[in-house]
Length: 237
Image (tube, rainbow, N blue to C red; front, side, top):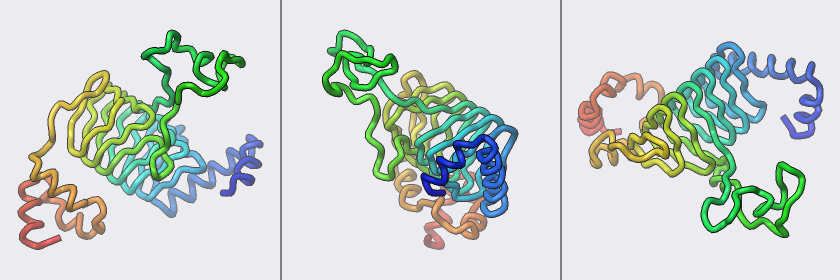
């Protein structure tokens, strides 16, 4: 949908509801998308397929990889989500920040040209409130096979590596390494999920990029990483 057409549709509540209804129907039939009550998927969201959207969840200005799902009440924006991700209940994104060092005040009138209160003391932008978008244009990047627990908050600009786990109620303020478990406020590493050798194997394998037939044939070996490693080693990729 072009920006001009999108603005025209959004200007009418009737047209907006109709467009949302037919887009949901289209995605369900062509991409195998499943929805629960009051799930909202923005017009610009790119769905790779077989995605699930929980009750009262919302996603806008984002893309979501194959088989990834968003649980009840999750709210995501400007986020790139990889394949086979599990996004828990009430996960949300936090955009914008205020200076906490050297600046006497954290109020935007002292560092920004545009403010919520309609005036400023600044003659230029002295502090960048928002992170620079990543190379793909999104502000937050979630890798493949990532699990975010309930009530996780993601700060603007963070990247979460493949296979990582973020514990419930964590606040992610920094990048998370692949196959690392983090938790807390702010989130800190708890432990690695596997040995360095096993992590290197998985990062090289990139199983999420394999055809479904390959995954189906090897699914039983996913229960124990050593079995998968031995299987792939015996048969090749």
